[in-house]
Length: 341
Ligand code: AOF
Ligand code: ZN
Image (tube, rainbow, N blue to C red; front, side, top):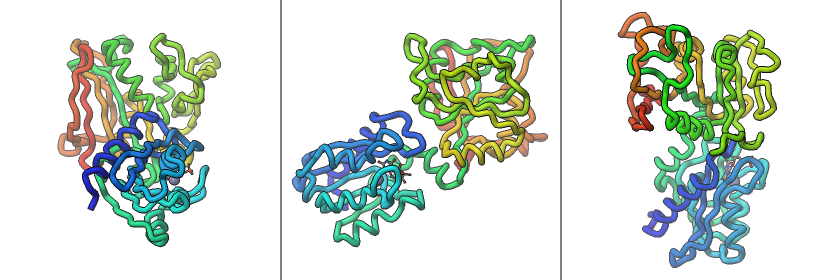
């Protein structure tokens, strides 16, 4: 059984993973704490993205020779593979770690097997400590590894009477500045931001992350911009600029587009519209989460956030469970998920 020091260390490891990096594409977020035999923290490590040290390796490097005889508390089962970096199972054995406690079992078949390898080396291994929190840390990543397609969050903004555009088609600034900043924080955690050609042509959006002064973040910190649909964009469209990578998927088939993104190791897609494209995702059962911003204004006419979602009668509605309601500026943000996600 994990003792109180180990439980505390797991909380610390979870926090280290959250603090280290909002986006570790295409890898999971992982934290690791090394404890001495009397329960003192020797080192804390975290993963900062593909190609950089795994959390265990990071903590081991910080602890140096003090890792000998220690307990490693890790949010994810240590990997057992030679990937972009070496296997953490071997690194833990080589460092003389005596006990390993982890939260979530590794769902990635290429990397799994760490627990068995550690046990074979005579290390005491315990699994499942704060497993729910550890799994929540990588909810979308885990979903993508299991299903082979990215987790899809559909975001929309609407007036209190449920319209996302006015009668003349204008849709800019329905929500408050605070909500738009909130959206930026969500975008920053996703691997790709997806729109259809309709939205790309109508709004000429940037779909980039910006700093507080409004300047775009460096190119390598930008999520992939994805434009789905067959129509061409003008050469001077903002989505064709060089502030962030852009992928054109010249298809109208949503499942094949998602499969393509899955093959590119995109784990979490932030779907921003428009209503017909979002409806197609919903009709295919491919909306895994909804984040809706509802603003206190009435439009009376104009498009809904979603059209043609494959629902003809109330009995066929896509039913969701609300998981969060937060006031953001003058607006309300509602998060909801299908029952099985
Ligand atoms: C991480 N960071 O701290 C741990 C991971 O091919 P690589 O080297 O990038 O390894 C990626 C896999 O390693 C990942 O899918 C996961 O299964 C496992 N553990 N990965 O990126 C870490 N501990
Ligand atoms: Zn590893």
